[in-house]
Image 1 (cartoon, rainbow, N blue to C red):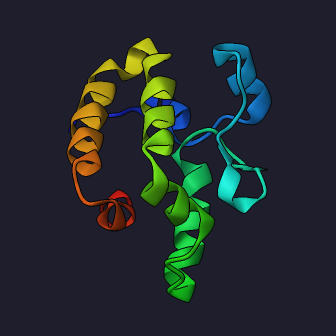
Image 2: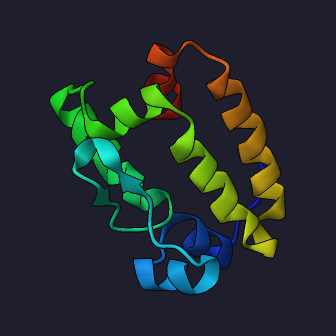
Length: 115
């Protein structure tokens, strides 16, 4: 895994919807299985909140897990988001490999390996 400094970590974990819209032309990821709820952060911190909540309550029916079982949209969102940042090119390549492997798994296992 590539080394990441403060700028890379901030880009990976955070950014509000307005920052994302400015950079990418669209907002934060929306989870259709949760009444089109938009994640708080565009980066991984947004989805980590849902994953941590599900882990605390042992709820495998959490909307983010349903979303992962139904398709690769969330993983594709993060790959495309990382591509927008030139300083994340090494990490983006790493993420593409990891998510590529995860996406080959049976759908019911994808939330486990994503989380």
